[in-house]
Length: 236
Image 1 (cartoon, rainbow, N blue to C red):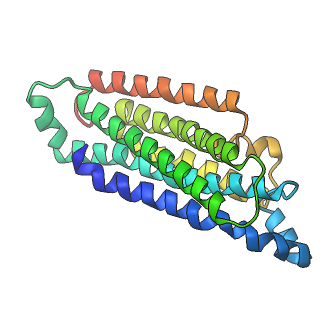
Image 2 (cartoon, rainbow, N blue to C red):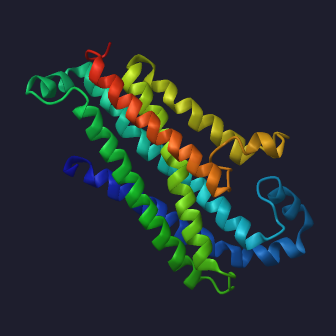
């Protein structure tokens, strides 16, 4: 864990600073949209403008969720790289359980997720104090958006761990669900996708019960991946 402390802190700072600088932009965006119809129509291709402040917070956290997912999947992918280098084999030869090295990568992923979520909350709450406009129930929106971010990322961690544990030679395919979900969420309206299709992406899902189901699948997938790693030989 200590070896990855710098990476965890760096990703957390990136997420916190991104929200801290991005959210106050709503102050300059609102009058611009009122004056420029072309800008309003262009922005509406990415986010709904019925409640601009809430939509802007949701969109900012959506982008952060993509970054956090990348940060959390990287340790799992790097673990398989270490398998191929023989490092994991040396650890196992010391008498540790077969699943323990992958379990260590999972712990790093969830530590990254937890720290990034905490910094997202801090950055979002400070941003609310900086901007001049008042967001109704802004603190609640930030907390709920942070919870959703956490749940959204868990499912992708689960997929990566499942692949790492059962089919490590396919580990790079763990990036595909992230790419697909990002395209659906960020560019779905531009591509003319239906709302039902866009909401297939965890990044676009706002229903907490559905997100909990996604996260539940992710947790089960983590368990299955660890179980699979305990049954196989290195990189087989």
